[in-house]
Image (cartoon, rainbow, N blue to C red):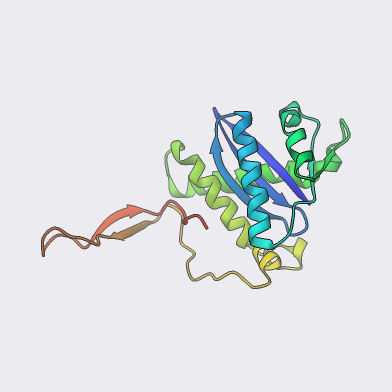
Length: 192
């Protein structure tokens, strides 16, 4: 079962899909609040699940917020069961309601630790989701969500400190004595 987290920050939104059995998070970027983009992201997520896990999304649970009303027909056309939680019962959405707070707490800690400017909040959220997926949790018998979903532990060999100094190789220097690397700041991992 997948839950959808939509969090508003300033004028942009990030969408996180939460697989409730493994607590694995998939963040699908940032966009303005346009219904077509929500449907586009949901379509991409459904295709991602089909391709990567050879299964279909069977059910989506949403609260009774009006932002999902335009997506009801799309969800039903895909053959996905849509569950609405009861009004004024936050107990039914416990994990889905607490997870945005967890993500933002980790992202805020990353920002304070690395002293990056506020305009890089999106990168902080993406790296926070990445780290949460790799950290073992007692809820999963001290396994990480990545390990439960993919049946192998994540490799920690490529784990870097967010905001640390790093060097990018200059592949095509113009002259022999040009620098072979440029100094940069590590802001996240490549997608995929």
